[in-house]
Image (cartoon, rainbow, N blue to C red; front, side):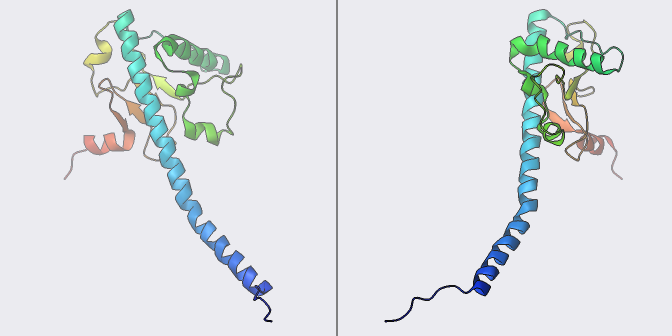
Length: 177
């Protein structure tokens, strides 16, 4: 009767080492996929805000008249609450206003709790003339990310619903030799 072959401790350690090295090699790839998914979600958020604002404009005949007062913490919270409140009937929830990259970088705070309200996308303060937001086209964005967290400049959404980043806009605007 022959004894079944079993792994030696050295063979087992080598197998664990190889699996560990392969795991370490995949971490950057996983990070890139996560960053890309967060950018796609951010773009979707901006498009949702665009659609909601279009509906707001159609129903009310003017851009939401939300102004940022003093740049203190309570003023920012009031600003965030006002945008969330005014566009909520048109679809976006409080989560739509949150950039997933900023959310994870901030430790995933519960934005539904009092005092944690925020908007990671800043609306352009247009006047109350019904055509102003549409007539400026791709000159002035409707909403812009509050910070550059995706590496190519802040994402912005325009009147036509297109989303771009500031780096791409600068490349298009600068003349080529």
